[in-house]
Image (cartoon, rainbow, N blue to C red; front, side):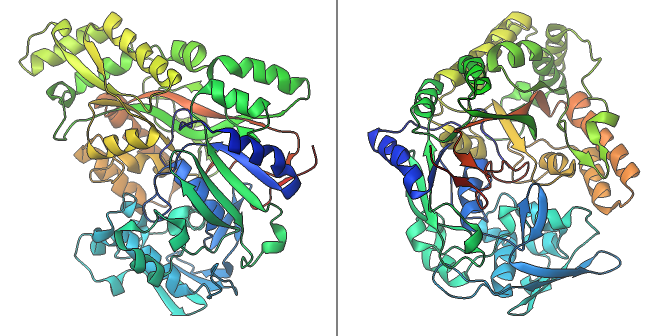
Length: 540
């Protein structure tokens, strides 16, 4: 799931203040967010879109404290070989009163695999029997391993046993969709909530681009008595100054803060003014290089040049002095991720640890291999920041200075109006170097390793390596966790050190400030940033 470095967007106005201040009486909550890209579960890849989708849709299971529990499915069975799953659905309704059926799941899952949908997450569904073959035109839709046996029975067949499959059923991508509703909107489905139906705790009422998404309690939700909130607002707030002011004025009930305001907010939280949550988060931020697109720079096709750019970054300075949060990373797979019963980073060292090479000398070696002038100062590379805020500029200028000082090449700053604009440019390949972030969709290293497989829809830098691809395929077919771990280790070595297909920068932590009256709000490790089903607000 694509992440923003700082949950960016645009600020709010006086109307939002009135809503927020009066909201406690009507049991509402205002959460800081960035603008969503789409409300279509099949096409959403970013955390902000998943926030709204997770609040308004529901899958076979729902994640509660990072554990999948019964949701639309009231029971399930798994075959001994773990290849066949049978889910029995409860009586649940869409927001227009029509029943949620197994056919809604079958349609949704096959829609993701239909090449016409152009879903970036299509490879996610290759776990289904014949899923990849259907996507590539080598099998028919009816041969894909998901079938509605009747309205209340969904049968799923997998290509290989997947130890984390039940976790996947909580992920927004696998939520059901009504075929009639999707087809009525065509390519515009997911852009207008008034033309959608929902089966989750909330109904999305309106989406004001670059401002807010407003939701209300869904009276048709099967577990509506558990839902305490009447209204939810995902409020876009870009600048940290704006965010801080809105939170201290109770225009925001929940926010993330980075940079200069962090310590001040932490001190205020210690005094009992706010609640502060700080914990590890299974997310990784790294530089990606456009290696094979129309706007790719020839320099970035060379692995030594890419590694030089990576090694030139002072990660400690960035994390401790510039970003002022998170953990230094020298690998792809973040702290806190499990491989079976083991914490992956506890047993596998990061690939870049101990690598001590001169970035400038390495860069020059790469230039010579490309038969180019060996003077780094004669070259300019473009860098795409994640937005246009003051903080985004500060982050970009840090990297620009690092590369100029330690290697000597120049960096031209591209522009992105906001996170949505940045994301669009990155997906189109309109960049040379860009900061990218990914949050785990499930608790297994494969959530990260598969990103860089040739052809993955989220492999925006177009990294491609035959050995790497072969390892990913082996992992998918390997059930022995110790062997899987060795394969993950080798994949990381290729990606991070040998080929430098990306440059790790930091693992993000989770730091959230909430008003004292906010209760029961969860911050899932996988999926959207917020889980609102069990949240409530009490009197101030």
